[in-house]
Image 1 (cartoon, one colour):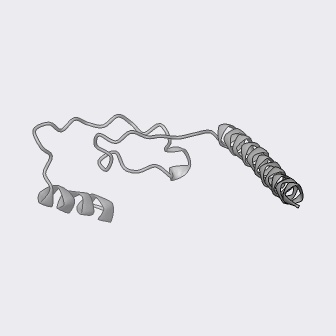
Image 2 (cartoon, rainbow, N blue to C red):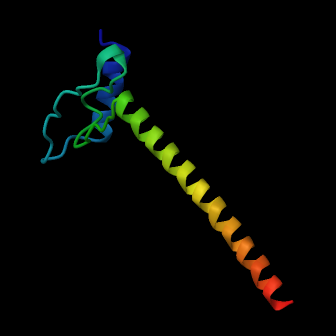
Length: 92
């Protein structure tokens, strides 16, 4: 007797048969912990991943850049206000 997942896969293949260009997919390298998808489900898909260390590094760099831009914007606005005050004083 077939299990439920096998019967679902068989019914899927009846509806969507493998084409003439079908190649067996390479094994998913990120299947540890049972979080991977079945090999019949990712034909011609590429697995893209990033390590948590690299992700955290990028996030920190972006946060630092946002902080620098915020500071720069503050000083630009402050300088603009000072210029406006000086222009008003010169007009008097």
